[in-house]
Length: 236
Image 1 (cartoon, rainbow, N blue to C red):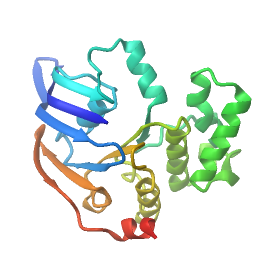
Image 2: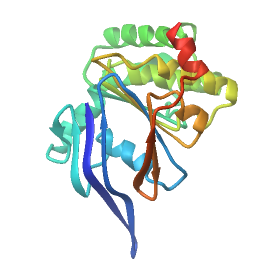
Image 3: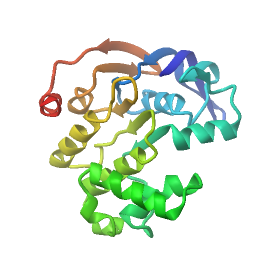
């Protein structure tokens, strides 16, 4: 599904050279939930950006469904990000002047979908995250947990093959974090959709099928976590 092969990423910050990723290889299978865990500055968000076509490697290969992202045109990468990958970020990234439904519909409208169809699909996506009754509310009228659920609905509205989450519970209290983790845990679909979640929180990482530990731009360990209460609740 998504694969990095001996990837490096080097940034230049003034006179300083930053080696954000140092020869990493990682494969995420279709239908798998992979957590990437590490401290701030470890390179975990850079890995997510490489997997999700938000950035390209300095050396090595980044593949999405077998296609080399670095070999693509900017237009092709943009198309893949818009139609085949959904993103969920720590700070929601909702437009304050749009309602919840309008925020969710935005990726479809940008892709040329009609307003009528985009609205219908946005409402269905909001219902999927339990917020069908909040579609006409603006972000400032929603709680933090509700805003993150709107962000998840927006990520799902194009029915993508992958959902990439960067610290999705980092701005939430523990109760709302559990709701979001349970929701994310339900998203992988065998043979169809993968989820990658970047986090520094062990309790969040533990909901994944695998945990990849990264430090100083290198994968230092990989583990299969014991089943959590969240996984058991989803399985019921």
